[in-house]
Amino acid sequence: MFLESAQYYDVIYSFKDYQAEVQQLVAIINEHHLSEVKSLLDVACGTGKHIQYLKDHYEVEGLDLSQELLDFARQCNPGISYYHADMVEFDLGRAFEVVTCLFSSIGYVKTHENLSRALTCMARHLLPGGLLIIEPWFTPDTWNPGTVHAHFIDEPDLKIARVNTSFTEGRLSCFDFHYLIGTPEGTKHFVERHELGLFTTEETSAVLVDLGLKVTFDAEGLTGRGLLIGRKPV
Image (cartoon, rainbow, N blue to C red; front, side):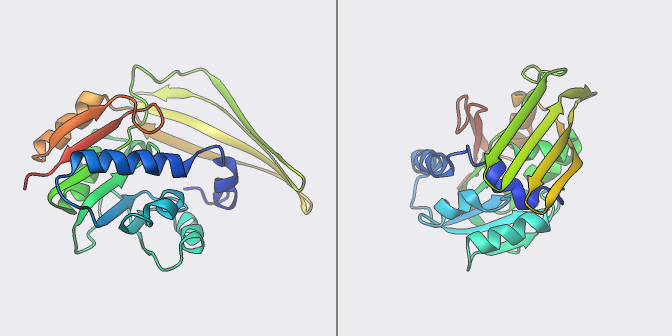
C-alpha cells in the first residue's frame, strides 16, 4: 500500500490542517474522559502528521501497515515508537488510555469480519475507562460511484496530477489513483488500487457495543465524516 506514492503523500495531503484536527481531537478527549490522559496509540498513523501535534499532549505511539509511510513518520517525529503491523491483527503487549484510527483508515479493513477483528484489537489495547475513537469512511448511502476526481500539485520542481473515478463492487468502494508526476529528473506515471469497505454507522457502532463499549457518535467529527467514540467500562 502506498509503495510508489509514499514519498509524495504529505505534499498531496498538504491541504489537511493536522494541527487544527488535533486541537479538536484533544477537546473531544477531554470532554469524554474522566481523568487525565497520558497515553495514546494512533492506529494507521501514516506519515505521523497527527502524531506531530499529538505528542505535545500525550505519550503517543503509532502503528501502520505501510513500512514506507512509517519511514517518513520516523523522520517527522524522531524518538516516537512506531509499529509495523496490520490493524486487524496486532498485539503490542500494553494498553493505552486512548486509541485512535483517523482519516477514514478503518475502511481499508474491507470486510465486516475484518472490521470486527480490527476493532477488537483496538479495544483490547484500551485501559479501563479508555476511549476508542474511529473516524469512519463513507457509508453505502454517502458514497457516490461514477464520479470523477482530480487533485493537482504545482510547485517549481514538482508537478503532480492524481485522477480517479469512483466505483462500487458489492460493499467495497474502489478507485484507481492514476498519478502523473513530473520532476527535474523526468516524468513518470503509475497506478495505485484502493479498496475500502462501506460500513453503515450502525454496523460499526454494533461491533463496538458488542465489545462492551459505550458508544456515542459525533456527526461532524474532525473533517465532516463523523467520529465514533467508544468508552471502555472502568
